[in-house]
Image 1 (tube, rainbow, N blue to C red):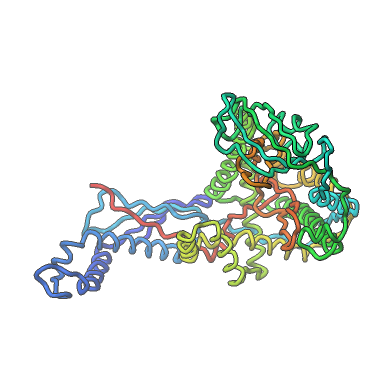
Image 2 (tube, rainbow, N blue to C red; image 1 turned 30 degrees about the vertical axis):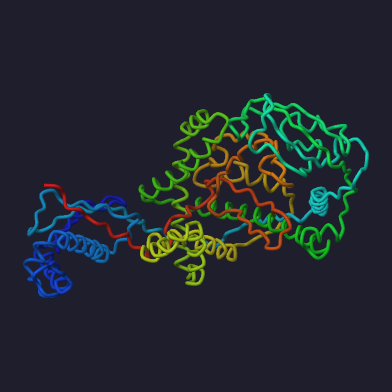
Amino acid sequence: MQTVETLNEGLKRAYTLTIPAGDIAKRVDAELKRVAPQIKMPGFRPGKVPTNLVKKMHGPAIEQDALNTSIQEGIQALIAEKQLRPAMQPTVELAEGYESGKDAELKIELEVLPQVPAPAIDGLKLERLTVPVDESAIDEQLKRFADGAKRWEDAGDKAAETGDQVVMDFVGKTMDGVAFDGGTGTDMAVEIGAGRLIPGFEEQVVGAKAGEERQIKVSFPEDYGAKELAGQDATFDLTIKSVKTAGESQIDDEMAKSLGLESLEQLRGLVKGQFEQENNGLTRTYMKRKLLDQLAEGHDFDVPPSMVEAEFNQIWQQLQHEATHEPDPQAALDEMEAEREDYRKIAERRVRLGLLLSEIGQANGVEVTQQEMQRLLMQAAQQYGPEDRQRFIQYVQQDPMAAAQLRAPLYEDKVVDFLFDKAEITDRETTKEELEAAIESEDGFATGTHSHDHDNHKPKQTRAKKKAEPAAEGEGAEAKPAKKAAAKKPVAKDDDAGAVTEAEAAPAKKPRAKKAAPTEGEAAADVPVEADAAPAKKPRAKKPAA
């Protein structure tokens, strides 16, 4: 093979690679000899088909495979010979006019990873803002648990009031008296005033007594889930089974047992652990951003444009998705467009930080173990169905770039932990509100390469008030005249900052540390941080049309 360098500017490289026709022919002949004994053809005994007939039948396909294999090996040999570290997959183009039996000339273009200057990690100073768990916050959470586990007591002949629970059977009908599908249910428990049913329903149950029958009239909302009922008037025939009043909420062992725990002490410990976990996540987010700010401030070097473009596209696609959930999607898109360059600078900074962390990790022996990698792979595979799961695992195992991208977030976290251990850390106690404000503040992260924080430039998030979920108890739950719940707007996810693991035995959904969109203070988690161990994916070249 003959290699000629045609471009060497900055991080860009280009080469022409000539593969001799003889090398391709030798590979074709070897493959023909390998497959010939396996070919079956009428008139010939198995394994006795002449090679020239095999070549006539399968020669083009075998030659194409031989060409592709030669190209792949040629590119890998070029990378090894020139000691290249590809930033992304090389682009490979087979020169026009290639014909069978002639030399194959390739044009190869790629960007290489920069020579990252040895990062200065001595003298790092960080402040760790700690938030002690507020006992009153634990009490408030326990009260919410108690309120959610109300003990209802039969009220006898008492007329139902707001705050009472009414158990009823119901039959929904259109205004011409025809019962509609899904409009019948029995033993539905409704807490008057909870706002779980369509407007006007609960208010008309006030005053009802056990044993009473009454008919009410309602109007379904325009956005109701069942299109045939949306915006329509209807009646409901109600049979009141019982009226119940709420007993006093008790925060005791019985409440804890109703949540599947042994005691109130155990529940209180879990709630405290939940808050500690959330606060620790916020503390880590703040420290990590401050750490990355210091690294970015002290290091400035060229980064591969292709990596910046890939990172920018990832951020942009995420924000475009978020914009579709805004009250005015077009206004959100316009705001994004006006700040496009800010996002591009954030992408560049994140790539640079990713490369810095990679250099630090490799220089100090930080690694992701095989066991950790296997766990990551199994976790990632769970998002696929049973049929695709194994294919995904094989893909990652066979593609070094895919494996590097899967490994990158954990590797970055381990490097950050290493730097935390090296840094001089001072502790200061603060409140959760002050810590959250520091994380969200632009001034809090203005020490990096660029002064704009991504969180302060993403589309304004004006959330609609979330409608209550419909009741779920009793028969015919799917038929209940409940409000249609508003779709919850997804929050832009950060790659890894502030992630909080939920406790296994949690009696209720755990609050999690707020995840922000990928910020200027974060490193690009998809940068293949162990780049030396991740050669570019082998491309396949197709023979151009004549």
